[in-house]
Length: 217
Image (cartoon, rainbow, N blue to C red; front, top):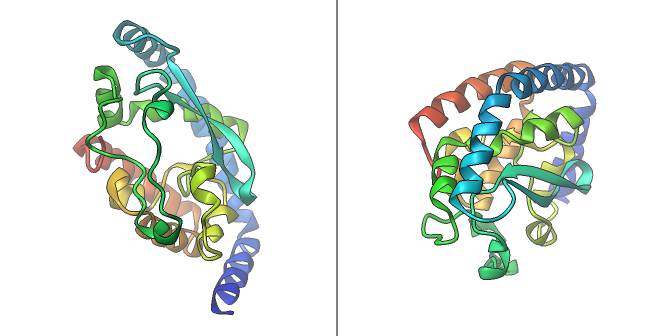
């Protein structure tokens, strides 16, 4: 019953911020378009580097879970060898989902260029197209893979009430190496305190985190 009450509160909070979410969408459209245009030379250079480093497509596509639990295709620069998913299965314990960590420092599937892309977070910039399309936002909970979402308890599913983001409060608080339960905590704090000003603050913090290469591998 307590979890249901929390979910109702968050739903009411979101409905009460329709104007803020409309501004958020406008900001997403403008900034993602500017980013796509300005970074177009970077896209070309990175595509060439990825293709020279390893065989396979430069763009990695994967199904993720977005707002309201709807699946969509996310775009990233490929940082692993082709068919990396088949070479190592995710170790997901349904009874201990809170301690799940998606990324690992010790992963021999990551290419040389891929390691650089991850540390610099340049592998994420194709998601500007996801933001422009509208299935992602610049700021929000990171979109999860379906194999993890299916084990979400009710309180975790509340993070699906808003669009997923390229960056978020969890990412500027630890980025790739924090456990799922901590990520969810940060995501719910973000949703409960959402404002356009908070999004702008997180975007600035993201820039500093990327330059310091905190939690990226």
